[in-house]
Length: 163
Image (cartoon, rainbow, N blue to C red; front, side, top):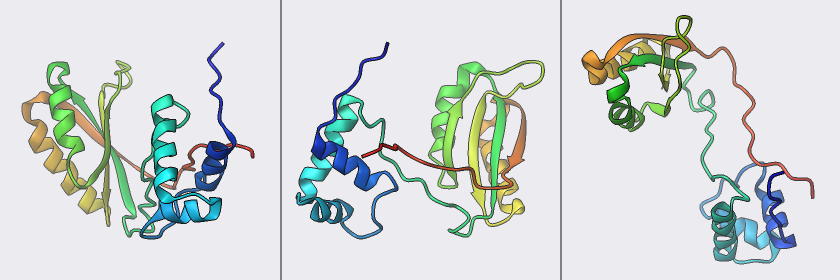
């Protein structure tokens, strides 16, 4: 059985206040703190401590690309030579049009791809152009590729806790 992490009432209140996202204001931790009777610095420190202890896995941005005008979103998939994937994956993940890039196992013969990079564009032509840029970086280390376009937004949620 997994270890159960204890959450004190203040941490529980912080989680409840942030589980639908941080407020879209210049100082979100201050805004949360004001609602809870804490300073923004205390909210931030406690959230960092929860990340360190494993109560919170990570704090990150989850943009809605459609609302930002990027209606063509494609998961580019690549069959990259194993000995190069780590270094090349870091280069691809650093591109400004790639939101995330990761290494996954192949499932040959049906799925030869081992590197995935989510690419965003205003239209499919933009995404294809970005995929061509990735292909140039990958060079001869890539054997094959494809683009799988999103048809809808998948539900994106973070930590949920009942208070």
